Length: 285
Image (cartoon, rainbow, N blue to C red; front, side):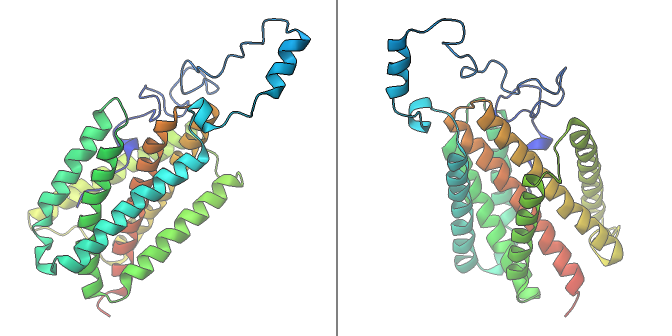
């Protein structure tokens, strides 16, 4: 089963440039969206007559339909749609596919990863591809969740509640200012994430070769699971920062799909790590 976050493959989601929410640029105050078409006030450098001022103030307030800019409502709506697609596909797989098909899901997971790569390297945002990825990932998660539920009854509900709690706690901490996404914060978190991914790849190769490094069982497995969940929360803070920067910088409305994609990946990451951690904690009960 493959699941990753855009932060590992590309930086600067909304602009597709080399800076992530301002990080990596020569100045931390640089706008991450480069040339902002909404940033220049056409009236700033000229004197307006009384008639021009009256006409301007009589115009209706600009909304997203007039400006074409991304809003928070856009992000919430697109994220809800991607998650709904993922959950619907997962529920269908849960009830329609037997547990014995788990081994064959490698093909579905591989297809999901292929779509993921296309999304990452495609310059334009593609809502159909994002929804296709959500559906394929949902099928994989649905059967995997069914396997976990068969071994540990009730674990899926526990993992969903745990994922919701992590999301809510991270959002509250971010909005309250307890977590600030700075360049230093990004560098440290990203370095830990890269190390974690390398460690997981080494563990997977060792498992295929018949060795057990104990990274997904026992006390060490609990520590690894907690780190994985913490990294998922880290990804969420990056997603939140990107959304804020996108809205502030006048990102196009269609970029809300990209924000939804990133949030969905982060939530899937947390859910998988939560499943593994709860399975370790419950053991053979």
